[in-house]
Image (cartoon, rainbow, N blue to C red; front, side, top):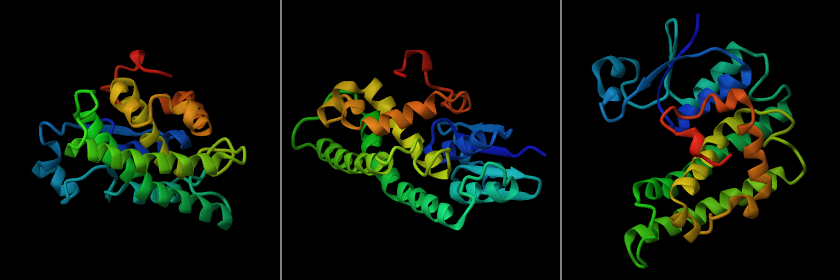
Length: 232
C-alpha cells in the first residue's frame, strides 16, 4: 500500500516529508491542496485533521498530521536508509540538529520570507513596520546560516554526516526558499545582506547545491515554481 500525502505546494513542513521519502527511495501518492480554494477547511479534510493543517499522511487506517511525527513513523515503517541514524549517538546528533532547525531556522525563515515574498521586491522605507520585520528576520536568518556553517565546518557533506538525514530534510526547504527569495526579490534581499549567499556562507551553499543536484531532491521542488528561470 502506497502512502498518500496531503500538502500545499512549497510548504516547508510538507517539503520535509517529500524529501524524507526521496532520501529513502520510496513511492508516495500526492493530494495537492489549494490554499486559495480553502481545501484545508473542507469537511473531508477536517476529518483527516481537525486542526486544518498540513502535512497529513495516510496509509490504510493510519493518519499522521505532523511532519516530525511522519518522519519518525517513516523510519520505523521503512527502516532501510535510516533518517535518524543507526546508533544512539547518531540518533542523538540528528535529533538535536533536526529539532534546532525545526524551532530556530523555521522561525527565522518564516519571519523573513513571509515579509519578503509579500513585498514588491523593493526595500521598504526606513522606520516602517515592514523594514523592522525584515531586519529582525535577516538577523535571525544570518544567525541560523552561521549555525549551519559551523555544522559543516568539519568537512561533512551533509548536516549530520556522510548521507542525508532528517536534519537535511528539515533544513533544506528553508534554505532553498531563501534562495528563491534571493532570485525573485533580489534588490530587497541584497539590502539585508543576502545578495550573494554563496560568498557569505560557502559551506551552506555547497551543501544546498549538493542536495539540489540529486535527481530525487530536484523532483520535490514545488510544482508552481518556474524552475528553468532559477539559479542553480
